[in-house]
Image (cartoon, rainbow, N blue to C red):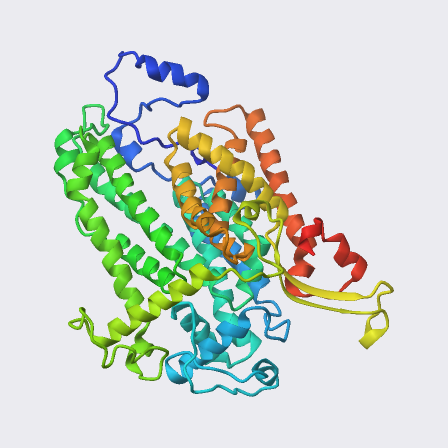
Amino acid sequence: MSSQSSQTVTEAPPEREPGRRPPAWEQRLRRFGYAGRRGSGVRERLVPPYPEPGARLWQYFGFAPLAAARLARLTAWGGPLLVAAFAGALRFADLGSPNAVIFDETYYAKDAWSLLEHGYETDWPEDANERIIGGETPVGSAASYVVHPPAGKWVIALGEWMFGLTPFGWRFMVALLGTLSVLMLCRIGRRLFRSTVLGCVAGLLLAVDGLHFVMSRTALLDLVLMFWLLAAFGCLLIDRDRARARLAAALPVGADGLARSSRDVGERLGLGVRPWRLAAGVCLGLACATKWNGLYVLAAFGLLTVLWDAAARRTAGARQAYAVTLRRDAGPAFLSLVPVALAVYLASWAGWFATSGGYYRDWAEGRDSSFSWVPGPLRSLWHYTTEVYGFHVDLTSQHDYESNPWSWLVATRPVTYFYESRDAGEDGCGYSSGCAREVLALGTPLLWWAACFALAYALYRWMFRRDWRAGAVLCAVAAGYLPWFLYQERTIFYFYAVVLVPFLCLAVTLMIGAVLGPPGCSERRRVAGIVAAGVLVLLIVWNFIYFHPIYTGTELPVDGWRARMWLDTWV
């Protein structure tokens, strides 16, 4: 692993003239860890290069130097693919167990099948769950009132279309997206930290997080939402690198071969068509079309990408970077994200638009309105939307597993999706203390508790070291987490926090990168860092293995189940 893996790439202004002393404020901030301005060329600060992968490890296994170098280059994709294969094996193993409709699958699995059959959600008989497990499909035809957009249910429906209305069928696509999200996080981490090793560490942490694991094996919408938000983050990262590379390519080069800042380039160069930002708009639209809390992330990511442009222009030489960005980049950023997301959101309702039986589908027919120029189906959808918004805001019914967002990061109130127990000797139970099976939506405790410290460290990196990577991670966490504090009186659950998990893993990886040691540190310091980081990762993996039975509904003796209830609030 290169020493660059833990190196901060700062959004610095143009370089100082040689021999010029740093300003007094910069000298004072050094005592708090401020890194100061780097002395490399502007091109390297705009687009830090990926370090060349080391080939020594492969040579230890007997490969010739040339073959070892080729294998090392393959790790950029090979490492993430191996981590994703490991995650997929975990998630698809015995995916149809428990052979039951668990927790809110009772809504989304059936709604997904209704979408396949009718194009809109329909009602089902009271005993539908038992009949479905028995092999029937007792779908009704009357429209059903639902409180989430259809995109996530269409994803679930794709698995049901391939494998039928079975537990494996309705969980298949969610497990696939969970696996792909691990692959994406490996690649996102590699791009963020400029280190394949740290990227794979981030993916491995996601692979062994209990909440992500359970949500990947359950047909709920939140894992689908997480996937699209993570995909949007990755698209914006690629867009950031492409835009900065365009600026870097236009900079003049000095006699020493280093690129120099240029006010003309920083303020006048257009950044052209940005397909990856358009792709982010599509992903954010799919997120909003899965659950509405994607709207907060859309707003946050839109602001983030504009700030990235301002920082890039400032580094390239712009004197009034924010004014230039508002004039040249803010408008295109808005058009790439908001209208695109809106179009995708409306497209997700295609089945509802194309049929006449959906709930409130014909509400606007025969109604006078000052907006009569708006097509009736759109007015009907707007009315449906306002009704659903009122439902969400007024949802205050008590639930055994509801939790306050203050408690989410320390995982004090997980949610039981499935539980059954038997006494000793009953139905073949061979344990003297009795038998228990549970599927508990609980994040791997050591990972989540480490993430609390990692977020504090990321805040320090952002405030005092001007580390844009820490700022990006904090932005994503804040966008997915802080809005819930506006609705603390609502009935809300810990598993909503699954959208945070990839970014918590990135925060922990950022902290691990610091533990590994700064660039140029001694070999002794590097070895100590590797040992400390390895111990942390192994403890998290062990913690996941220990809790694995209560993530999968594996039968345990009641004593073993109780031993895993570390907190009274987990029961």
